[in-house]
Image (cartoon, rainbow, N blue to C red; front, top):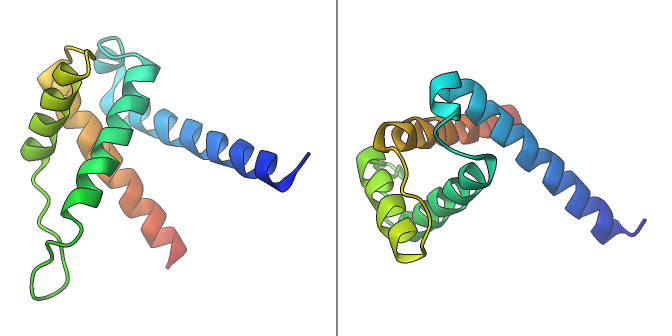
Length: 110
């Protein structure tokens, strides 16, 4: 197996761990409202959004993250791309879970 194949496999395993974390975080009722593929889509859109605002730091170097704004961004992009519609409250939990997961990963790296 090539190193590229190993990287792809490791990336897929990490993605699966992230989705499992999110499903655990949002609870069974919300898991029934959104498919695994939709969770992957939402993760990608959240990361795209965060990347787009990464240059907007305050004087302390922090980014003000508005979960409601991210959810609206997902809803707008999903509608444009023919995805969804998604339950607004489920999206709120998914965004919260994604942010929590990323924070935990950052903490583990430090």
